[in-house]
Length: 186
Image (tube, rainbow, N blue to C red; front, side, top):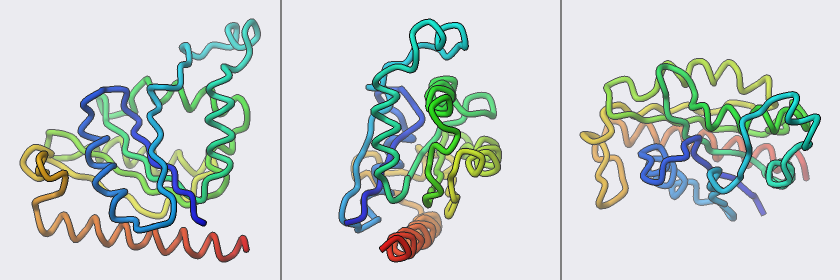
């Protein structure tokens, strides 16, 4: 059974990146797709003094174990001033203190969206180059600009046919990589 973890790098309760993620994850058509709400993983702002004093938070250790059991990851990350959100960076900082290999050389699909025309592309370019440092095999990258023009909030789908086809192609590439990775492991 394939276990795919999907999560948003946003802690907003009405995140458009979460909406895109959930829409895209439905297209995976794999055995087990597990949505993880990172906002439920309480972690103070990382600092070496805090780590020495209190250690790594239990919830971060639990998240690391969950990640170790995954066959792949689909992650939608908003862009804050051209970079990843501080919330998500903090989670990564804590996870990397356990082991820099956060994603265990598993396939990763990176997504982003924004109300603006570029859809978080600046952030995605940065993350696409950084994620391999954390053990990610970045397979697919998808950006959805002009979210409110291109996404049907009521139906939870992309309404622009060309962008929908691009997403489907990226999902197919990711799904194929997951299938190959799992076959190699068996």
